[in-house]
Image 1 (cartoon, rainbow, N blue to C red):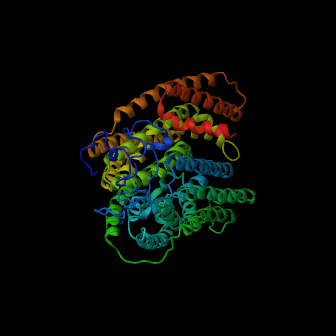
Image 2: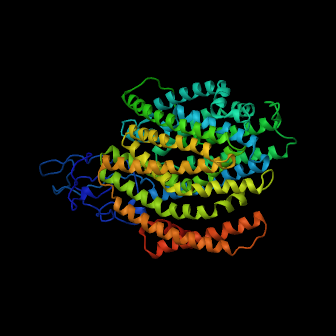
Image 3: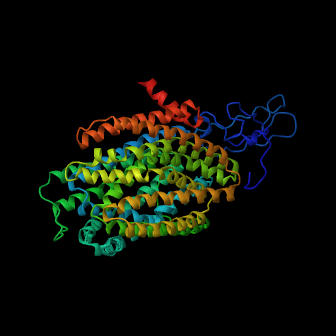
Length: 613
Protein backbone atom coordinates (compact mmCIF):
# COMPACT_ATOMS: atom_id res chain seq x y z
CA UNK A 1 0.00 0.00 0.00
CA UNK A 2 1.63 3.31 -1.03
CA UNK A 3 2.21 6.11 1.42
CA UNK A 4 -0.90 8.23 1.80
CA UNK A 5 -3.27 5.60 0.38
CA UNK A 6 -6.55 5.03 2.26
CA UNK A 7 -6.49 2.06 4.66
CA UNK A 8 -7.92 -1.24 3.51
CA UNK A 9 -11.20 -2.42 5.04
CA UNK A 10 -10.72 -4.17 8.40
CA UNK A 11 -12.18 -7.41 7.07
CA UNK A 12 -9.79 -7.55 4.15
CA UNK A 13 -7.16 -10.21 4.87
CA UNK A 14 -4.54 -8.21 2.97
CA UNK A 15 -4.98 -5.42 5.50
CA UNK A 16 -3.89 -7.63 8.37
CA UNK A 17 -1.42 -10.25 7.25
CA UNK A 18 2.28 -9.59 7.79
CA UNK A 19 3.30 -11.88 4.90
CA UNK A 20 2.08 -11.02 1.38
CA UNK A 21 -0.91 -13.18 0.59
CA UNK A 22 -0.71 -15.74 -2.24
CA UNK A 23 -3.65 -15.92 -4.56
CA UNK A 24 -5.90 -18.89 -3.92
CA UNK A 25 -4.58 -19.45 -0.43
CA UNK A 26 -7.05 -18.84 2.40
CA UNK A 27 -5.96 -16.62 5.24
CA UNK A 28 -4.40 -18.61 8.02
CA UNK A 29 -5.85 -18.18 11.48
CA UNK A 30 -2.44 -18.07 13.07
CA UNK A 31 -1.81 -14.58 11.68
CA UNK A 32 -3.34 -11.68 13.58
CA UNK A 33 -6.45 -10.16 12.02
CA UNK A 34 -6.85 -7.11 14.25
CA UNK A 35 -5.17 -3.76 14.21
CA UNK A 36 -1.41 -4.45 14.05
CA UNK A 37 -0.72 -2.03 16.87
CA UNK A 38 -3.04 -3.76 19.33
CA UNK A 39 -1.32 -5.80 21.99
CA UNK A 40 -0.60 -9.40 21.15
CA UNK A 41 2.02 -11.83 22.29
CA UNK A 42 5.34 -10.23 21.43
CA UNK A 43 6.45 -13.25 19.43
CA UNK A 44 3.59 -12.79 16.97
CA UNK A 45 3.51 -9.02 16.75
CA UNK A 46 7.14 -8.02 16.26
CA UNK A 47 8.19 -10.78 13.91
CA UNK A 48 9.61 -12.03 10.71
CA UNK A 49 10.91 -10.01 7.84
CA UNK A 50 10.61 -12.86 5.33
CA UNK A 51 11.79 -12.78 1.72
CA UNK A 52 9.07 -12.18 -0.82
CA UNK A 53 7.33 -15.38 -1.89
CA UNK A 54 7.20 -16.02 -5.63
CA UNK A 55 3.79 -15.80 -7.26
CA UNK A 56 2.10 -19.17 -8.02
CA UNK A 57 2.07 -20.36 -11.63
CA UNK A 58 -0.92 -19.15 -13.65
CA UNK A 59 -3.82 -21.55 -13.85
CA UNK A 60 -5.22 -22.81 -17.15
CA UNK A 61 -8.65 -21.56 -18.12
CA UNK A 62 -10.08 -24.86 -19.44
CA UNK A 63 -10.93 -28.16 -17.86
CA UNK A 64 -8.67 -31.13 -18.21
CA UNK A 65 -5.25 -31.81 -16.83
CA UNK A 66 -2.76 -29.05 -17.26
CA UNK A 67 -0.61 -26.62 -15.35
CA UNK A 68 -2.25 -25.80 -12.04
CA UNK A 69 -5.09 -28.36 -12.47
CA UNK A 70 -5.59 -31.80 -11.03
CA UNK A 71 -7.15 -34.78 -12.82
CA UNK A 72 -10.69 -33.60 -12.03
CA UNK A 73 -10.13 -30.24 -13.64
CA UNK A 74 -10.37 -28.29 -10.42
CA UNK A 75 -7.72 -26.00 -9.08
CA UNK A 76 -5.81 -27.67 -6.28
CA UNK A 77 -4.93 -25.81 -3.13
CA UNK A 78 -1.77 -23.83 -3.77
CA UNK A 79 0.85 -24.41 -1.12
CA UNK A 80 3.46 -21.69 -0.69
CA UNK A 81 7.04 -22.72 -1.35
CA UNK A 82 8.87 -23.87 1.73
CA UNK A 83 10.93 -21.03 3.07
CA UNK A 84 12.98 -20.98 6.24
CA UNK A 85 11.35 -18.53 8.59
CA UNK A 86 13.46 -15.59 9.62
CA UNK A 87 14.00 -15.34 13.36
CA UNK A 88 11.36 -13.41 15.24
CA UNK A 89 12.11 -9.93 16.45
CA UNK A 90 11.58 -11.07 20.03
CA UNK A 91 14.08 -13.90 19.79
CA UNK A 92 16.59 -11.85 17.82
CA UNK A 93 16.39 -8.87 20.15
CA UNK A 94 16.63 -11.04 23.29
CA UNK A 95 19.77 -12.76 22.01
CA UNK A 96 21.26 -9.43 21.03
CA UNK A 97 20.32 -8.08 24.45
CA UNK A 98 22.23 -10.87 26.20
CA UNK A 99 25.31 -10.26 24.04
CA UNK A 100 24.97 -6.51 24.50
CA UNK A 101 24.66 -6.90 28.27
CA UNK A 102 27.83 -8.98 28.45
CA UNK A 103 29.57 -6.54 26.12
CA UNK A 104 28.59 -3.58 28.29
CA UNK A 105 29.65 -5.37 31.47
CA UNK A 106 33.07 -6.30 30.07
CA UNK A 107 33.39 -2.80 28.60
CA UNK A 108 32.65 -1.29 32.00
CA UNK A 109 35.15 -3.61 33.60
CA UNK A 110 38.04 -2.46 31.46
CA UNK A 111 37.04 1.19 31.96
CA UNK A 112 37.06 0.57 35.70
CA UNK A 113 40.43 -1.17 35.41
CA UNK A 114 41.81 1.87 33.58
CA UNK A 115 40.58 4.21 36.33
CA UNK A 116 42.15 1.95 38.95
CA UNK A 117 45.41 1.90 36.96
CA UNK A 118 45.83 5.62 36.19
CA UNK A 119 43.06 7.46 38.09
CA UNK A 120 40.83 10.13 36.55
CA UNK A 121 43.55 12.67 35.84
CA UNK A 122 45.44 13.87 32.79
CA UNK A 123 46.59 10.42 31.60
CA UNK A 124 43.04 9.06 31.52
CA UNK A 125 41.73 12.26 29.92
CA UNK A 126 44.40 12.04 27.21
CA UNK A 127 43.61 8.38 26.53
CA UNK A 128 39.86 9.00 26.41
CA UNK A 129 40.15 11.89 23.97
CA UNK A 130 42.56 9.95 21.75
CA UNK A 131 40.40 6.82 21.93
CA UNK A 132 37.38 8.88 20.83
CA UNK A 133 39.15 10.31 17.78
CA UNK A 134 38.93 7.09 15.68
CA UNK A 135 35.19 6.99 16.32
CA UNK A 136 34.83 10.64 15.33
CA UNK A 137 36.79 10.28 12.09
CA UNK A 138 35.05 7.01 11.26
CA UNK A 139 31.64 8.63 11.78
CA UNK A 140 32.66 11.56 9.57
CA UNK A 141 33.92 9.21 6.86
CA UNK A 142 31.23 6.57 6.80
CA UNK A 143 30.01 5.48 10.22
CA UNK A 144 26.73 7.37 10.34
CA UNK A 145 25.96 6.26 6.80
CA UNK A 146 26.69 2.62 7.53
CA UNK A 147 24.58 2.48 10.66
CA UNK A 148 21.67 4.37 9.13
CA UNK A 149 21.11 3.79 5.42
CA UNK A 150 23.16 0.76 4.44
CA UNK A 151 20.84 -1.85 5.98
CA UNK A 152 17.73 -0.45 4.25
CA UNK A 153 19.51 -0.36 0.89
CA UNK A 154 20.94 -3.86 1.35
CA UNK A 155 17.47 -5.16 2.23
CA UNK A 156 16.10 -3.66 -0.96
CA UNK A 157 18.94 -5.16 -3.01
CA UNK A 158 17.89 -8.65 -1.89
CA UNK A 159 15.13 -8.45 -4.50
CA UNK A 160 17.82 -8.46 -7.24
CA UNK A 161 18.25 -11.63 -9.29
CA UNK A 162 21.62 -12.27 -7.62
CA UNK A 163 20.21 -11.59 -4.14
CA UNK A 164 22.08 -8.30 -3.95
CA UNK A 165 25.59 -9.79 -4.13
CA UNK A 166 26.88 -7.41 -6.84
CA UNK A 167 25.48 -4.38 -5.05
CA UNK A 168 27.05 -5.52 -1.78
CA UNK A 169 30.43 -6.08 -3.42
CA UNK A 170 30.35 -2.63 -5.00
CA UNK A 171 29.44 -1.00 -1.70
CA UNK A 172 32.21 -2.84 0.16
CA UNK A 173 34.78 -1.85 -2.45
CA UNK A 174 33.98 1.87 -2.36
CA UNK A 175 33.70 1.99 1.44
CA UNK A 176 36.94 0.07 2.08
CA UNK A 177 38.99 2.35 -0.17
CA UNK A 178 37.48 5.45 1.46
CA UNK A 179 38.24 4.11 4.93
CA UNK A 180 41.83 3.18 4.08
CA UNK A 181 42.62 6.61 2.63
CA UNK A 182 40.88 8.33 5.55
CA UNK A 183 42.84 6.29 8.09
CA UNK A 184 46.21 7.23 6.60
CA UNK A 185 45.32 10.93 6.49
CA UNK A 186 44.00 10.84 10.07
CA UNK A 187 47.21 9.32 11.48
CA UNK A 188 49.27 12.01 9.75
CA UNK A 189 46.92 14.74 11.05
CA UNK A 190 46.91 13.50 14.67
CA UNK A 191 48.41 16.75 16.13
CA UNK A 192 45.75 18.80 14.33
CA UNK A 193 42.96 16.70 15.85
CA UNK A 194 44.51 17.11 19.30
CA UNK A 195 44.63 20.90 19.03
CA UNK A 196 41.00 20.92 17.88
CA UNK A 197 39.61 19.01 20.87
CA UNK A 198 41.79 20.28 23.73
CA UNK A 199 41.61 23.63 25.49
CA UNK A 200 45.37 23.76 25.97
CA UNK A 201 45.19 27.28 27.42
CA UNK A 202 43.75 25.96 30.67
CA UNK A 203 46.96 24.07 31.47
CA UNK A 204 44.85 21.12 32.66
CA UNK A 205 45.40 18.91 29.59
CA UNK A 206 48.38 17.33 27.84
CA UNK A 207 48.32 17.79 24.03
CA UNK A 208 51.58 15.85 23.67
CA UNK A 209 50.33 12.72 25.45
CA UNK A 210 46.97 12.91 23.64
CA UNK A 211 48.80 13.07 20.29
CA UNK A 212 50.99 10.08 21.20
CA UNK A 213 47.93 8.00 22.09
CA UNK A 214 46.16 9.20 18.93
CA UNK A 215 48.96 7.94 16.65
CA UNK A 216 48.56 4.47 18.17
CA UNK A 217 44.75 4.44 18.21
CA UNK A 218 43.74 6.15 14.94
CA UNK A 219 44.41 3.00 12.84
CA UNK A 220 41.24 1.69 14.48
CA UNK A 221 39.30 3.74 11.91
CA UNK A 222 39.83 1.13 9.19
CA UNK A 223 38.77 -1.75 11.40
CA UNK A 224 35.77 0.09 12.81
CA UNK A 225 34.72 0.48 9.19
CA UNK A 226 35.27 -3.17 8.29
CA UNK A 227 33.28 -4.23 11.35
CA UNK A 228 30.40 -1.86 10.52
CA UNK A 229 30.32 -2.95 6.86
CA UNK A 230 30.28 -6.66 7.62
CA UNK A 231 27.75 -6.14 10.41
CA UNK A 232 25.42 -4.36 7.98
CA UNK A 233 25.68 -7.21 5.46
CA UNK A 234 25.01 -9.84 8.13
CA UNK A 235 22.11 -7.87 9.64
CA UNK A 236 20.49 -7.51 6.23
CA UNK A 237 20.68 -11.32 6.01
CA UNK A 238 18.95 -11.55 9.42
CA UNK A 239 22.17 -12.78 11.10
CA UNK A 240 22.65 -10.76 14.30
CA UNK A 241 24.67 -12.96 16.64
CA UNK A 242 28.29 -12.57 15.41
CA UNK A 243 28.15 -8.77 15.34
CA UNK A 244 26.60 -8.74 18.81
CA UNK A 245 29.27 -11.00 20.36
CA UNK A 246 32.36 -9.61 18.60
CA UNK A 247 32.59 -6.55 20.94
CA UNK A 248 32.76 -8.96 23.88
CA UNK A 249 35.94 -10.47 22.44
CA UNK A 250 37.27 -6.95 21.83
CA UNK A 251 36.71 -6.12 25.50
CA UNK A 252 38.46 -9.31 26.60
CA UNK A 253 41.50 -8.33 24.53
CA UNK A 254 41.54 -4.88 26.19
CA UNK A 255 41.14 -6.43 29.66
CA UNK A 256 44.17 -8.64 28.98
CA UNK A 257 46.05 -5.55 27.75
CA UNK A 258 45.27 -3.64 30.95
CA UNK A 259 46.33 -6.61 33.06
CA UNK A 260 49.74 -6.48 31.36
CA UNK A 261 49.79 -2.68 31.70
CA UNK A 262 49.16 -2.85 35.47
CA UNK A 263 52.00 -5.30 36.13
CA UNK A 264 54.54 -3.32 34.11
CA UNK A 265 56.74 -1.15 36.35
CA UNK A 266 56.78 2.63 36.22
CA UNK A 267 54.33 5.30 35.11
CA UNK A 268 53.51 6.97 31.79
CA UNK A 269 55.69 10.05 31.55
CA UNK A 270 54.04 13.45 31.05
CA UNK A 271 57.15 15.58 30.74
CA UNK A 272 58.60 14.60 28.40
CA UNK A 273 56.14 12.33 26.57
CA UNK A 274 57.98 9.37 24.99
CA UNK A 275 56.08 7.44 22.30
CA UNK A 276 58.39 4.42 22.72
CA UNK A 277 57.61 4.05 26.43
CA UNK A 278 56.52 0.42 27.10
CA UNK A 279 53.39 1.24 29.12
CA UNK A 280 52.18 3.74 26.54
CA UNK A 281 52.81 1.28 23.68
CA UNK A 282 51.10 -1.60 25.47
CA UNK A 283 47.98 0.45 26.16
CA UNK A 284 47.73 2.01 22.70
CA UNK A 285 48.53 -1.07 20.60
CA UNK A 286 46.54 -3.44 22.82
CA UNK A 287 43.34 -1.38 22.56
CA UNK A 288 43.79 -1.13 18.78
CA UNK A 289 44.24 -4.91 18.51
CA UNK A 290 40.89 -5.35 20.26
CA UNK A 291 39.16 -3.55 17.36
CA UNK A 292 41.16 -5.58 14.81
CA UNK A 293 40.01 -8.86 16.37
CA UNK A 294 36.43 -7.56 16.59
CA UNK A 295 36.37 -6.90 12.83
CA UNK A 296 38.03 -10.15 11.77
CA UNK A 297 35.56 -12.21 13.80
CA UNK A 298 32.81 -11.38 11.29
CA UNK A 299 34.62 -12.82 8.28
CA UNK A 300 33.89 -16.55 8.94
CA UNK A 301 30.12 -16.01 9.55
CA UNK A 302 29.87 -13.98 6.34
CA UNK A 303 31.65 -16.68 4.35
CA UNK A 304 29.26 -19.27 5.76
CA UNK A 305 26.35 -17.39 4.16
CA UNK A 306 27.85 -18.14 0.75
CA UNK A 307 28.89 -14.54 0.11
CA UNK A 308 32.26 -14.06 -1.58
CA UNK A 309 33.93 -10.70 -1.86
CA UNK A 310 35.56 -9.47 -5.02
CA UNK A 311 36.60 -6.01 -6.07
CA UNK A 312 33.76 -4.43 -8.02
CA UNK A 313 34.29 -0.88 -9.25
CA UNK A 314 31.90 1.65 -10.71
CA UNK A 315 28.84 3.55 -9.57
CA UNK A 316 25.36 2.31 -10.46
CA UNK A 317 21.96 3.98 -9.92
CA UNK A 318 21.58 2.71 -6.37
CA UNK A 319 25.10 3.74 -5.43
CA UNK A 320 24.15 7.26 -6.56
CA UNK A 321 21.06 6.96 -4.37
CA UNK A 322 23.37 5.86 -1.56
CA UNK A 323 25.55 8.89 -2.24
CA UNK A 324 22.60 11.27 -1.99
CA UNK A 325 21.56 9.83 1.34
CA UNK A 326 25.17 9.75 2.49
CA UNK A 327 25.63 13.49 1.99
CA UNK A 328 22.81 14.24 4.40
CA UNK A 329 24.09 11.68 6.89
CA UNK A 330 27.57 13.22 6.73
CA UNK A 331 25.95 16.58 7.37
CA UNK A 332 24.25 15.08 10.42
CA UNK A 333 27.53 13.65 11.71
CA UNK A 334 29.44 16.86 11.01
CA UNK A 335 26.92 18.95 12.95
CA UNK A 336 26.93 16.49 15.85
CA UNK A 337 30.73 16.59 15.95
CA UNK A 338 30.67 20.37 16.23
CA UNK A 339 28.67 19.89 19.40
CA UNK A 340 31.05 17.18 20.61
CA UNK A 341 34.09 19.37 19.93
CA UNK A 342 32.67 22.26 21.95
CA UNK A 343 31.67 19.80 24.68
CA UNK A 344 35.20 18.40 24.93
CA UNK A 345 36.83 21.83 24.96
CA UNK A 346 34.49 22.98 27.72
CA UNK A 347 35.29 19.86 29.75
CA UNK A 348 39.06 20.33 29.37
CA UNK A 349 38.70 23.93 30.61
CA UNK A 350 37.52 22.58 33.99
CA UNK A 351 39.27 20.39 36.51
CA UNK A 352 41.52 17.61 35.24
CA UNK A 353 39.54 14.40 34.90
CA UNK A 354 36.42 16.07 33.51
CA UNK A 355 36.64 14.20 30.21
CA UNK A 356 37.12 10.87 31.98
CA UNK A 357 34.22 11.49 34.38
CA UNK A 358 31.96 12.55 31.51
CA UNK A 359 33.02 9.57 29.39
CA UNK A 360 32.41 7.01 32.12
CA UNK A 361 29.13 8.61 33.23
CA UNK A 362 28.00 8.55 29.60
CA UNK A 363 28.98 4.90 29.39
CA UNK A 364 26.91 4.11 32.47
CA UNK A 365 24.05 6.22 31.08
CA UNK A 366 24.03 4.16 27.89
CA UNK A 367 24.04 0.76 29.58
CA UNK A 368 20.24 0.37 29.84
CA UNK A 369 19.80 1.72 26.32
CA UNK A 370 22.54 -0.54 25.02
CA UNK A 371 20.86 -3.64 26.42
CA UNK A 372 17.25 -2.74 25.57
CA UNK A 373 17.24 -0.02 22.91
CA UNK A 374 20.10 -1.19 20.71
CA UNK A 375 18.94 -4.81 20.71
CA UNK A 376 15.41 -3.75 19.77
CA UNK A 377 16.54 -1.34 17.04
CA UNK A 378 19.02 -3.80 15.51
CA UNK A 379 16.37 -6.46 15.18
CA UNK A 380 13.57 -4.13 14.07
CA UNK A 381 15.56 -2.24 11.41
CA UNK A 382 15.19 -4.83 8.60
CA UNK A 383 11.47 -5.06 9.33
CA UNK A 384 11.07 -1.27 9.29
CA UNK A 385 13.04 -1.13 6.06
CA UNK A 386 10.87 -3.73 4.37
CA UNK A 387 7.63 -2.06 5.46
CA UNK A 388 8.90 1.34 4.34
CA UNK A 389 10.09 -0.14 1.01
CA UNK A 390 6.61 -1.59 0.51
CA UNK A 391 5.09 1.83 1.25
CA UNK A 392 3.08 0.41 4.15
CA UNK A 393 2.67 3.46 6.39
CA UNK A 394 0.40 1.61 8.79
CA UNK A 395 2.99 -1.01 9.63
CA UNK A 396 5.77 1.57 9.91
CA UNK A 397 3.65 3.48 12.44
CA UNK A 398 2.86 0.22 14.26
CA UNK A 399 6.58 -0.59 14.57
CA UNK A 400 7.35 2.94 15.78
CA UNK A 401 4.53 2.96 18.33
CA UNK A 402 5.30 -0.46 19.73
CA UNK A 403 9.05 0.17 20.01
CA UNK A 404 8.34 3.53 21.72
CA UNK A 405 6.08 1.90 24.30
CA UNK A 406 8.47 -0.96 25.03
CA UNK A 407 11.31 1.56 25.45
CA UNK A 408 9.18 3.65 27.81
CA UNK A 409 8.15 0.77 30.04
CA UNK A 410 11.68 -0.58 30.34
CA UNK A 411 13.77 2.61 30.48
CA UNK A 412 11.77 5.14 32.55
CA UNK A 413 11.91 3.08 35.80
CA UNK A 414 15.63 2.49 35.28
CA UNK A 415 16.25 6.21 34.68
CA UNK A 416 14.27 7.13 37.81
CA UNK A 417 16.22 4.71 40.01
CA UNK A 418 19.53 5.87 38.48
CA UNK A 419 18.76 9.40 39.69
CA UNK A 420 18.77 7.97 43.24
CA UNK A 421 21.65 5.50 43.06
CA UNK A 422 23.96 7.52 40.80
CA UNK A 423 26.42 8.44 43.55
CA UNK A 424 26.55 4.92 45.05
CA UNK A 425 27.18 3.53 41.55
CA UNK A 426 30.14 5.87 41.04
CA UNK A 427 31.74 5.19 44.43
CA UNK A 428 31.11 1.43 44.34
CA UNK A 429 32.55 0.90 40.86
CA UNK A 430 35.21 3.57 40.37
CA UNK A 431 36.79 4.26 43.75
CA UNK A 432 40.00 2.39 44.47
CA UNK A 433 43.53 2.19 43.14
CA UNK A 434 44.65 5.58 41.86
CA UNK A 435 41.13 7.05 42.08
CA UNK A 436 39.70 8.69 45.21
CA UNK A 437 36.18 8.24 46.56
CA UNK A 438 35.51 11.97 45.99
CA UNK A 439 36.31 11.72 42.28
CA UNK A 440 34.22 8.56 42.00
CA UNK A 441 31.30 10.29 43.72
CA UNK A 442 31.48 13.17 41.23
CA UNK A 443 31.22 10.62 38.45
CA UNK A 444 28.11 9.16 40.08
CA UNK A 445 26.59 12.61 40.49
CA UNK A 446 27.10 13.26 36.77
CA UNK A 447 25.19 10.06 36.03
CA UNK A 448 22.34 10.90 38.43
CA UNK A 449 21.88 14.44 37.15
CA UNK A 450 21.55 13.28 33.53
CA UNK A 451 19.38 10.18 34.03
CA UNK A 452 16.19 11.97 32.96
CA UNK A 453 17.51 12.01 29.38
CA UNK A 454 17.58 8.22 29.00
CA UNK A 455 14.14 7.79 27.40
CA UNK A 456 14.46 10.89 25.16
CA UNK A 457 17.80 9.54 23.95
CA UNK A 458 16.26 6.15 23.11
CA UNK A 459 13.34 7.82 21.32
CA UNK A 460 15.67 10.00 19.25
CA UNK A 461 17.62 6.92 18.14
CA UNK A 462 14.37 5.14 17.22
CA UNK A 463 13.00 8.13 15.32
CA UNK A 464 16.20 8.44 13.30
CA UNK A 465 15.88 4.80 12.21
CA UNK A 466 12.32 5.44 11.02
CA UNK A 467 13.42 8.43 8.94
CA UNK A 468 16.29 6.46 7.42
CA UNK A 469 14.05 3.47 6.68
CA UNK A 470 11.90 5.87 4.63
CA UNK A 471 15.07 7.08 2.86
CA UNK A 472 14.71 10.51 4.48
CA UNK A 473 18.19 11.55 5.56
CA UNK A 474 17.49 15.27 5.39
CA UNK A 475 15.15 15.54 8.38
CA UNK A 476 17.54 13.97 10.96
CA UNK A 477 20.23 16.41 9.87
CA UNK A 478 17.91 19.38 10.35
CA UNK A 479 16.88 18.06 13.78
CA UNK A 480 20.54 17.67 14.75
CA UNK A 481 21.24 21.26 13.69
CA UNK A 482 18.54 22.50 16.09
CA UNK A 483 19.82 20.23 18.88
CA UNK A 484 23.35 21.56 18.41
CA UNK A 485 22.15 25.17 18.35
CA UNK A 486 20.50 24.50 21.71
CA UNK A 487 23.50 22.63 23.13
CA UNK A 488 26.40 24.98 22.37
CA UNK A 489 25.13 28.12 24.19
CA UNK A 490 24.16 26.02 27.22
CA UNK A 491 27.66 24.50 27.34
CA UNK A 492 29.31 27.92 27.30
CA UNK A 493 26.84 28.99 29.99
CA UNK A 494 28.09 26.09 32.14
CA UNK A 495 31.67 27.23 31.58
CA UNK A 496 30.79 30.79 32.59
CA UNK A 497 28.57 30.11 35.60
CA UNK A 498 29.83 26.89 37.18
CA UNK A 499 33.01 26.20 39.12
CA UNK A 500 35.74 24.18 37.41
CA UNK A 501 34.75 21.17 39.51
CA UNK A 502 31.09 21.26 38.46
CA UNK A 503 31.46 21.94 34.74
CA UNK A 504 31.22 18.21 34.03
CA UNK A 505 27.90 18.02 35.91
CA UNK A 506 26.49 20.87 33.87
CA UNK A 507 27.70 19.29 30.61
CA UNK A 508 25.93 16.01 31.41
CA UNK A 509 22.67 17.85 32.17
CA UNK A 510 22.93 19.86 28.95
CA UNK A 511 23.45 16.64 27.00
CA UNK A 512 20.21 15.17 28.35
CA UNK A 513 18.26 18.39 27.75
CA UNK A 514 19.40 18.30 24.14
CA UNK A 515 17.88 14.85 23.66
CA UNK A 516 14.59 16.06 25.15
CA UNK A 517 14.49 18.76 22.47
CA UNK A 518 15.41 16.22 19.77
CA UNK A 519 12.73 13.72 20.84
CA UNK A 520 9.98 16.36 20.76
CA UNK A 521 11.06 17.62 17.35
CA UNK A 522 11.33 14.11 15.93
CA UNK A 523 7.85 13.17 17.12
CA UNK A 524 6.33 16.30 15.57
CA UNK A 525 8.15 15.76 12.30
CA UNK A 526 7.09 12.12 12.08
CA UNK A 527 3.50 13.18 12.77
CA UNK A 528 3.73 15.56 9.81
CA UNK A 529 5.25 12.82 7.62
CA UNK A 530 3.17 9.80 8.64
CA UNK A 531 -0.01 11.21 10.11
CA UNK A 532 -1.56 9.60 13.18
CA UNK A 533 1.26 8.06 15.25
CA UNK A 534 -1.10 6.57 17.84
CA UNK A 535 0.47 8.94 20.32
CA UNK A 536 -2.44 8.71 22.78
CA UNK A 537 -1.50 5.16 23.59
CA UNK A 538 2.19 6.05 23.94
CA UNK A 539 1.33 8.99 26.23
CA UNK A 540 -0.89 6.71 28.31
CA UNK A 541 1.95 4.24 28.77
CA UNK A 542 4.30 7.09 29.69
CA UNK A 543 1.83 8.36 32.31
CA UNK A 544 1.41 4.93 33.95
CA UNK A 545 5.17 4.36 33.85
CA UNK A 546 5.98 7.74 35.42
CA UNK A 547 3.55 7.06 38.29
CA UNK A 548 5.11 3.64 38.90
CA UNK A 549 8.62 5.12 38.70
CA UNK A 550 7.86 7.87 41.21
CA UNK A 551 6.67 5.25 43.68
CA UNK A 552 9.86 3.28 43.01
CA UNK A 553 12.01 6.36 43.68
CA UNK A 554 10.21 7.06 46.98
CA UNK A 555 10.76 3.46 48.09
CA UNK A 556 14.46 3.58 47.09
CA UNK A 557 15.04 6.84 48.99
CA UNK A 558 13.37 5.45 52.13
CA UNK A 559 15.49 2.31 52.01
CA UNK A 560 18.65 4.41 51.61
CA UNK A 561 17.95 6.35 54.81
CA UNK A 562 18.19 3.22 56.98
CA UNK A 563 21.59 2.07 55.66
CA UNK A 564 24.28 2.72 58.32
CA UNK A 565 27.73 4.06 57.48
CA UNK A 566 30.27 1.28 56.90
CA UNK A 567 32.78 3.42 55.05
CA UNK A 568 32.43 5.00 51.59
CA UNK A 569 32.83 1.97 49.35
CA UNK A 570 31.00 -0.69 51.38
CA UNK A 571 28.12 1.70 52.12
CA UNK A 572 27.91 2.54 48.42
CA UNK A 573 27.69 -1.15 47.48
CA UNK A 574 24.93 -1.78 50.05
CA UNK A 575 22.92 1.23 48.84
CA UNK A 576 23.46 0.28 45.21
CA UNK A 577 22.08 -3.22 45.72
CA UNK A 578 19.25 -2.40 48.15
CA UNK A 579 18.01 0.78 46.51
CA UNK A 580 18.32 -0.70 43.04
CA UNK A 581 16.37 -3.85 43.88
CA UNK A 582 13.68 -2.04 45.90
CA UNK A 583 13.29 0.85 43.44
CA UNK A 584 13.06 -1.32 40.33
CA UNK A 585 10.99 -3.94 42.15
CA UNK A 586 8.37 -1.40 43.21
CA UNK A 587 8.34 0.31 39.79
CA UNK A 588 7.86 -2.85 37.75
CA UNK A 589 5.57 -4.31 40.40
CA UNK A 590 3.23 -1.32 40.09
CA UNK A 591 3.31 -1.61 36.29
CA UNK A 592 2.40 -5.29 36.57
CA UNK A 593 -0.42 -4.45 39.03
CA UNK A 594 -1.73 -1.83 36.62
CA UNK A 595 -1.66 -4.53 33.92
CA UNK A 596 0.42 -2.47 31.51
CA UNK A 597 0.55 -4.91 28.62
CA UNK A 598 3.82 -3.57 27.21
CA UNK A 599 5.55 -5.18 30.19
CA UNK A 600 4.45 -8.64 29.01
CA UNK A 601 7.47 -9.40 26.76
CA UNK A 602 9.94 -8.87 29.61
CA UNK A 603 7.90 -10.77 32.20
CA UNK A 604 7.37 -13.68 29.82
CA UNK A 605 11.06 -14.02 29.12
CA UNK A 606 11.94 -13.71 32.80
CA UNK A 607 9.39 -16.41 33.64
CA UNK A 608 10.85 -18.71 30.99
CA UNK A 609 14.36 -18.21 32.34
CA UNK A 610 13.17 -19.01 35.88
CA UNK A 611 11.40 -22.16 34.69
CA UNK A 612 14.52 -23.33 32.86
CA UNK A 613 16.46 -23.02 36.10
